[in-house]
Image 1: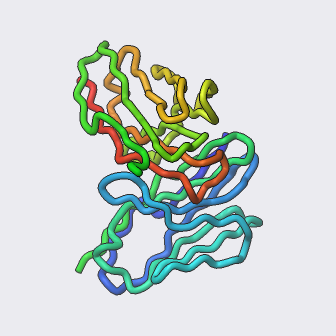
Image 2: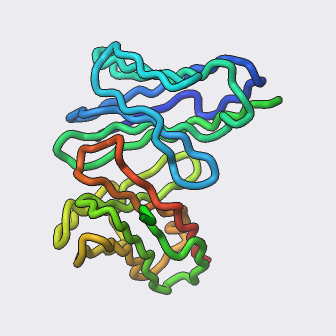
Length: 111
Length: 114
């Protein structure tokens, strides 16, 4: 069974801290790994990672994939209250036409 | 260009009632799917379609039906609602299956079954 596991499930930090969110996976036929940010409504796309070791960066957010150890991390530096959200990791399965999501990490940034 | 439109946004149903969640996209996307999101469980795939006339089951299809008579529309039917179907439902579409970074989600439909 395809499985994606995120940790921690919940994280509370102070504004300005740096956080690392983890995503590990066990799937039959990996194509790519995606990170989404979900505030009150629909998930919004952050990154898609297909190759190992290549960091994707967008402002204070960055992510990297390790296909040997089957995990990815999402880093957020100099956190702001607007970063408070649920962060979802999902794996796109080759051939099976589907995304398998992790449980999500609820990140709360306190001022 | 409206993107992915879901209706209704909120619905309360009694156990045993049936209803249809509507999903429409105006981007000529081939691939459409329905997910449900429950607390602490991320999104789980219910049904998906790779084109008009073609549908298939996802992880949690029981209690739901879908059809894809046109490219634009992908309705999700609850045949006999149960409290376990209380959830937030998201419709998603993409130009092709496998184009992970261009999956568009609807705004969600909050369903409560009492």
